[in-house]
Length: 354
Image (cartoon, rainbow, N blue to C red; front, side, top):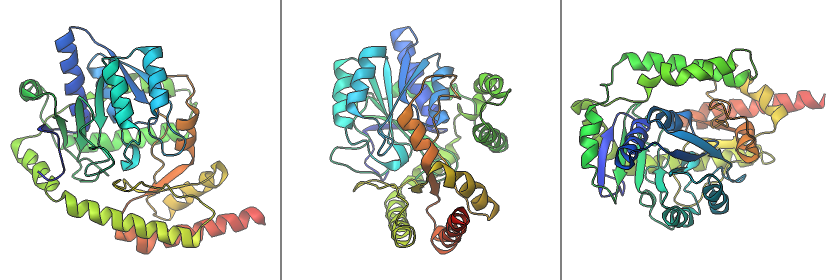
């Protein structure tokens, strides 16, 4: 495989399935379920598997600059909550700057570190990305670096994963009908996020995990597993293209809207999408205007706290989720989406001054 993967790896149905397998295995080895510590802006697909494995979840806040975990905050959370495992995602494809320090903290506290490279396959940093945790998970699902719409990897340098070969066969086989169910799930979740505090929100969030379990836990047949392996072989070219497009988007943006901040990637990062920041007032008008114009703007990743029934506040994760927007990394974004978005922003700002 391309990509500097850990020594041992197993193709899974999706990244969520890999997280489930790792947590379920820890439960089998220790004889008890545990507490998973995770950032409040991680995708729900990374946390639902914890519930399926019988684990509870404790959220924590993130850096206000890049949305990633910070070593000082992790140390405080480890001492306060005493979790059994930490999920550390490289948000937006941006390697966590302080992951080596975080890994040391986890090792000292005997906490299993799961490095989440779902959006950072192929990324590099001053340390070996993908090799810092007890387990590493990757994804080749929708909007990931390698975008197949399915597939993931469970990997490790410390565990040969022989147990996973058997455990994975206990998961149901992927079927075409899951695509339709996931599309419905995504639409419903968007409505709930767009119109918070509705009378049915809490009830729906309570039943979603059990009702949607089939979307997160499954295995692939051998043909689809081969598709994943072959797709990863093209990773180097995919990463190069994503970086080129993102760089061009940044150039166009800073030439046209220099007063609006773009999300800055460090050297070695693999851009997930072209991301930028807008204030609440502009965002409220910009998102519906873009969608109406056919511009595929996304507002990921919001705080996951409401979906998890967590009433605590995570101000940095909330602010990041409330101000960041992003676009796919494609030639169409450069040629069509961005020019039209620039026009919409100009119209909205002109209207606000009128």
